[in-house]
Amino acid sequence: MQRETDVVVIGGGPVGENVADRARAAGLEVVLVEHELVGGECSYWACIPSKTLLRSAAALRAAQRVPGAAEAVTGALDVPAVLRRRDEWVSDWDDHGAVGWLESVGIALERGHGRLDGPRRVVVERPDGSDLALVARHAVVVATGSDPLIPEVDGLVEAAPWASREATSVERPPRRLAIIGGGAVAVEAATAFAGFGTEVVLLARHGLLGAMEPFVGEAVAEGLRGLGATVRLGVEPVRVARDEQGAVRIMTDDGDELVADEVLVATGRHPRTGSLGLETVGLEPGAWLDVDDSLLVLAAVNDETPWLYAVGDVNHRALLTHQGKYQARAVGDLIGARATGRPLDLAPWGAHTATADHSAVPEIVFAEPECAAVGMTAEAARRTGRDVRVADVDFAAVSGAGIHADGFTGRARLVVDGELGTVIGATFVGPDVAELVHPATIAIVGEVPVDRLWHAVPAFPTMSEVWLRLLEALGRPEAAEQGVAAAAGGEPRGSRRTGTTDEEPAA
Image (cartoon, rainbow, N blue to C red; front, side, top):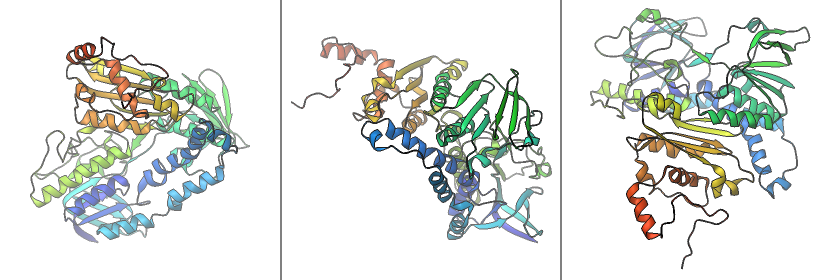
């Protein structure tokens, strides 16, 4: 059986849904192909369940940090209630709601495995064993995502390790859990299961969260230990076996042996392209799909009119759901514009490009403590040869943080291009700092001069006051500095009267 349509989207996760939505909004006929649940990894096995599992224990810890609330919160975490709430958020792994949305906007769904079969052609292997050939008049978009990467460790595969799906869909937390890895999935899982009361041992070959500023991983390691987890850095497994009683035995490269009920592997991802039919369009099966900023697949058999695009994890630009959805909106609008003859905006920061992937990717790790970052680290910026200015501030200097929680511990860093005078990176670590990253993202995308940020006044007393402290650490512009000194009798900028407010009397 064969059918023609305007656009075929392979992969019905949030990224594929957004492509389909934008192309459909342009008036195009769209078919979405999905072999599992519409809504994909993020909705059922990643972002949504993991953050739901983390939230309850985080809320409990937040209350315990505030006198008055701490005395009222006297019970332990109700783990079964946490799991029931997780089940509600993933709709008990039922996608009827997502399918209903597709129907409401006129997007056709084809259940089954989709693979390329030459230019503009997708074959769908349906659950009933039949095949459907879809021929796209305008575009095929690959949004198939990625899978966990299992490292080559003796006996690991045979030991039936958990990956992220098993961790986020857990029905009963194990008494002992070993985690291999030091990235976001590993530390969030360690935080969640330690909150459940599981004995957690985390093994990381290097430090934690190595793509962020060094102080981030140090804070998270300390935070996890504070939750009772064991964090072992510079250690990796060399042999894994599950014994007759079902326990997992892990031999490490320092000669130690760990015993756990389950082992979670969180050591990276690889693309879901092995059975995608890439060879039919001149590409390598199992490879990441290289794209340009318009998300057009490079090195593919594209005819005179571009037709093959890749969005989300599969293009390896930024393996984050929100960034994949950003790409999806751009490419969906681009396909619509090309199909209807509207002008294209392919310039940097244009409507049809994913420019932010290069310099303004926000990432939040919901660990203990929270970590939020966007843009470049100081070291990464220096490697580009830039003149880098760095401001570091301890949250102890921020009244709003102290009010938020007794003993608030955290740190913020701003990275500035010294020549351009604009923010190119920001990092925040501490309880409930996730919401602080978006202003930094706006500053980077908007290329806002630091001098202008002095006029973006943070409300007092909030944690956003950290922005003022960061600017004070950088120092005011020379001309403004002289003006302030003259008006204030020479009081140095950046001084702070500890224990007093920064507000002036009304009269």
